[in-house]
Length: 207
Image (cartoon, rainbow, N blue to C red):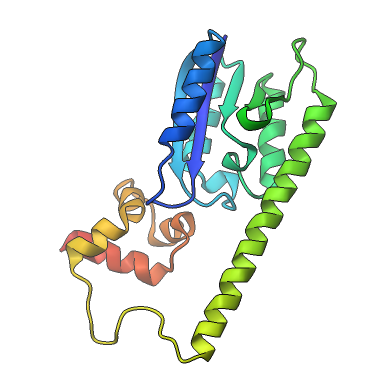
């Protein structure tokens, strides 16, 4: 059986090594052939069409035989309920099942039909994940406002300019997309940074 692995983390500083290791171990135990691995560092709230690894995976399944897509947990597929369900629908129309390791969920039955209980579980888990992200953002926003209200400072001290090499090192993901020819606006959307920050990184690369 041919499978592909999909992993995701939200930040450049995070690693998806554990996800890859656990999914490879599972595939080996089940005697699956890993036909491809697609790893990305991007927010789970990003729309499917703006996720490079997910787009590459979709194209791969158009040209290669894939029976299953393995993910570590459903939130690795995304934290936007609608986008997750769109991905599932796309996979299913191609006859590809999604396997979620931490819950041992298989979205298609052996005969290729949709497993209704798994579908319901995925919908619930996707919504829980979306709600969790919303709660985290709410707490961060509240903390940010309290910090400012208390006289706190955000950002670099006025007049201090970050060295180009440090800026490039800090924004590796931004550099990656710019090198691929993405526009400033596209890159800003993909890495969830302001266009001003992306422009600074681009200038630092040129320097």
